[in-house]
Length: 370
Image: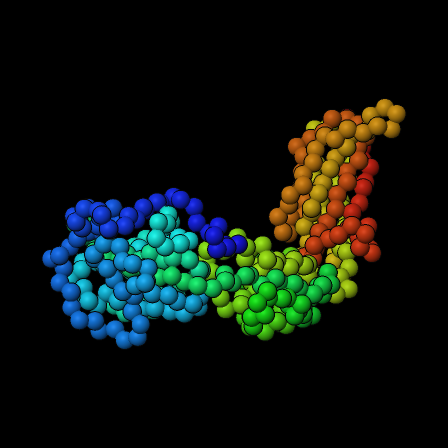
């Protein structure tokens, strides 16, 4: 979290010197300030209304001339008085005190379509703002102003979500309850949702932005990850680390078909009595599913029997595409074997689900001499 007095490092230091007792060469001081003394730039009457930022082209103004804002207030950045600038833009720096401060630039080359741009500082301190131009392939500045912003830095809300039962059954509405969230300044909060991850084929939109309680209805079974951002209306892009820690949450849950039953595997060895010269196919295409869902193998292992009832693995596969229900080997040496294989249906399987044992099988078989 960005806090006053510890907000800025010294990546860009500008040392301001008192004008009393110094040289009258204002151009050298302007050069120190990073301001180009562009006297050829005509100054026109302002077309802006409201309080505008005082822009200086002379040496550093006294602190009594610096405008003061309360955090949350706005001021007009007025470039209408310099209509001849080529590609005008603004640079923003900030520090902790005035004068004799070190400034850190937080925005460079900010362009506005409006000549009279309403600027609301995000944080307290001294804001040093320069009006610049992009001419002849370079970046030069023609005037600058200062604002002293008073107030306390807004703090991010603390997002809290009520427990979500897992798994969620397909067709049921998931209640997303953020009413336990709090804000340090008791600001009114709203909640913005997004879908980070969803099963293939899902087109469900994210929950509505706004109220603390929203409903979400998954459209296909599978794994969902949502993200919610608690908003207090004073979001500050410079305190994102703090916001990410406190005001973001990622609820994750699985959606399953209510009462989903495990598939029943029917694995055939083709040919039924293979010899050592024949290719062998392990075919589960005759398997069935209570809900008629699309099936696939999700593991397959062939073990060869050794002495003393020991086995060694001779072939295996773990990843199968949807609808892939058979796998083959070119041949196996003579001997006794065991094949172990399991099925997966459309719903993610979890160990311990009743009936899951029906989706796996192990079958001994023998490979003979030709």
